[in-house]
Length: 477
Image (cartoon, rainbow, N blue to C red; front, side):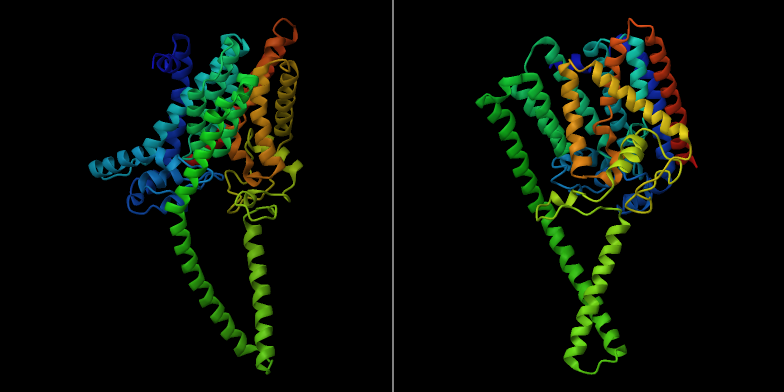
């Protein structure tokens, strides 16, 4: 318990950074609450669906608002197996506040949780820069500011989705693992299980990163039978069994009911189309008339299904029966998505189609109005690559990069979430300032060091002014 309290204690030198951060992001949270409060404070007490119809910020989902207001297993259980149960105490709190005040204060509850997660994400990232990479206080603070200036770090920090919580857990795991590497310690079985269960419980794929961290920390000892069984195989199997139980218990009955209802609607629509076809066709032979209807109806259904799919900007998945293959995408263009979305929109907002949702009305690829945005993006990527080169001998950097590579395999390789890849920046974007940290350390005794600091500071200022003004303008406009 003492170690946990020491880990969470805000040190004297960190207090100023935390105060400034809290003031800035409390303001951004206030803007977000103001934008939707007229509807969410009132109607959402009895109308859970109002969140989905009224909340539109990029592709972020207001599921957290809905679940805390009307608890249920709403998240995809194979991607977020424990998340619904983690927020259950918040549901009880919100229910009590509704009874006391007559208002749904879910926005304030979520804002406080996200603000707390971001404060500690900031602290652990700052400690990574200072204690593990070895940067001085000023430079560590600069890189923290750079990170939170990234477009979809700033946005994810205030919207009611799970990404900020995932980011906090991933950065916490990196910090703990980095300290273990630095001090020559191992991740224990208990530590690994706790980190995996909490992290994978929020986002299952991120549990893989905990095992990657453990592999880099423990080395060959990772494959010891006792550790491999108790810390890796058993928790992973247990999580999968729990997700399947959760699906059968909470999700499957609802899916069956929806299928029955959909079947009724489909049959009604078919009968209507059949009657209309029979009344208008010039074919007289009964059998030929029936065959003609079947061909026309199937062609129309196929055309409508294709139109619905294309309107969602989803690429063609890999063929197969597995539920995971449905989330893949082999047709969305990789290069354009990398330039405009992965390293574009993730870091620098597009003013056109601002915060549009690709599943509603935003085009898959949006270009910048001004060339300066591409220059800033290119400089950030070049600094990132330079940092990887200068930190190539660091086991901690390779560990961080392994998690990044796993994300890139999911997004660019399999195409998972590629149509809105920028909203998942919280899972990987911290690798960029971490790599830059090694560049600053290795250039500290060179004349170019001051130029690098000035360049990073200029980019940071640009990102905050540019992204911040667009975000605040959207929320208050």
